[in-house]
Length: 98
Image 1 (cartoon, one colour):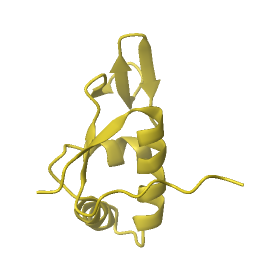
Image 2 (image 1 turned 180 degrees about the vertical axis):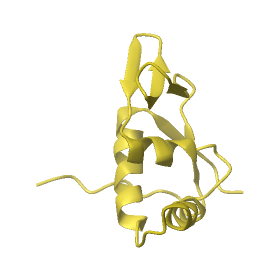
Image 3 (image 1 turned 135 degrees about the vertical axis):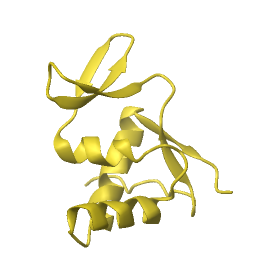
Image 4 (image 1 turned 90 degrees about the horizontal axis):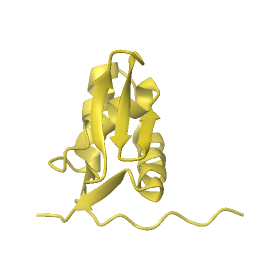
């Protein structure tokens, strides 16, 4: 049985954690997260989600942008599941709600 995801505060905005640098890596032809010990190569979906994790947009705004950009919906559950995984990996943290 998997543990339930922790509750994300309403209005919290995901951002890349300070330890990581998010960028496009031409040699990898993919977005990556760089950190002192190495690099995480991201698949296209992960890259598109993390690209929007600037600390300025709530999850609903992030999801709406993805749904509009890719003409796909609903994406909320998938995006939230990814963000929980990214938080568990230490890739993101949260700006407090305004």
